[in-house]
Length: 385
Image 1 (spheres, rainbow, N blue to C red):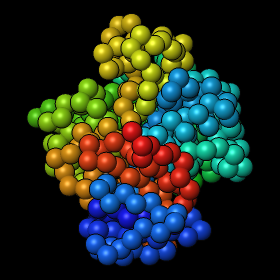
Image 2: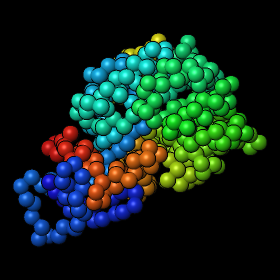
Image 3: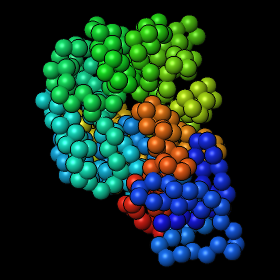
Image 4: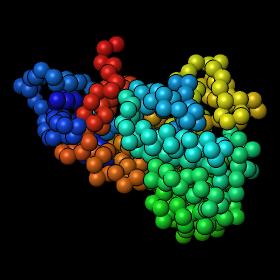
């Protein structure tokens, strides 16, 4: 299969009139087409559209009415396809704070699907555990009844059998027991992400020493920045060791603050996430639950009855468009490459270059997803209006 696109761009390269050949799930060659180039049988002739690496969502709880917390294979499969419709080619199903047995069940289901490959859509790369070891003062829409103080032994009892599936864990580093927990996670190769936290700058500094490397949904559910107490937000901006997740939906974070974060961190220090929930892709008035908490979709946002934002309705194609003031290379950096670097997969994913996995998305002039390709296979096709 060959793809003829107006532009092919990734974090490290930009080519106009791109002719990309795929073979056995990988990119075989990247060349240039000219006016004499004719499409062959089986080619994808999308010369008026752009080709970029497939988006990677490392923080997504659900979509299309389904939740990761259902701990159900069919639910994860439907979420996978929902994400593919929005250009996502890889993702980490993300939990919320919940009972230990339910979290273990989610890990079991995700592990089983990863091993079987029995699903259509975005590829599952592991799991992101958001909680339960978070600060109740910054719980956001996380169910308080299931919040726990960090305990490494407790964690290993319920998550230990599936530790290789856990790629990221969000926790509050200021809590008693968090330092032991961070050491366990870092030693196991799990990314420690600081989130739902009231930590001071000094406490974040200590967390970095214990292996913390990410900040969960930067600007949300964390101590803010003041002139004499930088807090978590100030640490996220100032410390190069930390990569910042960013929900660019223009609701959770003001667009000016999104730009300020990117200008402070550089494009290589930010990962666009959706933080998508079951209400993503659903109409106004749709209701569902996050744990025991009722949520309603209204006016483009999902909120608890008290008005608290409850995850987002964002999809990564919209986040990519919202970041449109940045060039394609910087946006692909934030939408795929940085996440893959964090996960240690940037040697084979996230580039439009020979030898890399053929995980690609075709975007039209308006930024609408027209084709999503995972491992060289078309999993979503909207070339016709």
